[in-house]
Length: 418
Image (cartoon, rainbow, N blue to C red; front, side, top):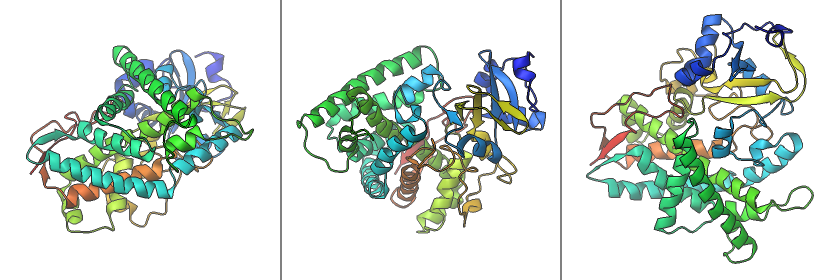
């Protein structure tokens, strides 16, 4: 190992280059090496570039507690960045610029918007279940259209059936292909460019007064946004930020699928909710978010030199925080591989322990601003599935491979509605 990997460090090393291991093992890669090395952080290389991989509460604090510590710029692989964030979006900004743009998303995804979205989602899901009655659906595909409808409604965008179908397909492809390279990623990128063109047209039409006023919708707020200098977002950037509302809302479907998976695997919880119990709905959903794989990890580059656990980070050093591994860390979560919603009864929150969508304070760090929306819509999905539907799961492959990023039950979660 060369001097760049051995000087000023107390962290153990895990081989010369771990790229293939990460591709093969996915979500489990970092934790497996941490357990083998007896440490919560280690050094290795990805694509021959030195990197520190870390998990656990202390690592999350190091990564998120100071929003000056790490930048996302140059840290996230281009194939992922172009599909999920693109350039000049809120996630590419740092410090004051990031906090300023983040306030826009806090307004878009604030309490009133969440309440509106829950009502819209519940109504749309009940209507969809009436259409599904007497048949089987692959929930992963079926719930996407429901959530795409909600996302467009949340944004103040009217959509006819062809538009809804196109956006559902395009947004879904961005999510599914985020962990891939090659043809699937290229196709999703092509679909994203088509979606961006549509979004640019909406922004231009709104600014020109060719669309009706939709006070409080994401389109109106983004198109009308002014930064600290009084400047509007460039049309292309506004389109990207609109997609940063639409796409993550559709991605909540993965948690809906995992919640259904948990209800099938644990019918005792389904029976409790069907009987009208409300107290454990939130603990159940929080355990879904902790237990099931969503984002595997997040990468950042050090913005300045600092030391942590005997390792000196220099400006530009790459670090990867293991989100899935932190959510399964045995020191934070006793029996982490057991699905136990009761662990969240009376839970007061810990911004550096449950990091399914990032850590720290969402107002100032890169933690997902749509976390409250995610929790609320998943709670509503569990409520509706348990109380307003009669469903069963036919024989299928319910295994969830941790090597697949992003993960899903192999079957896509087939449900039969009576």
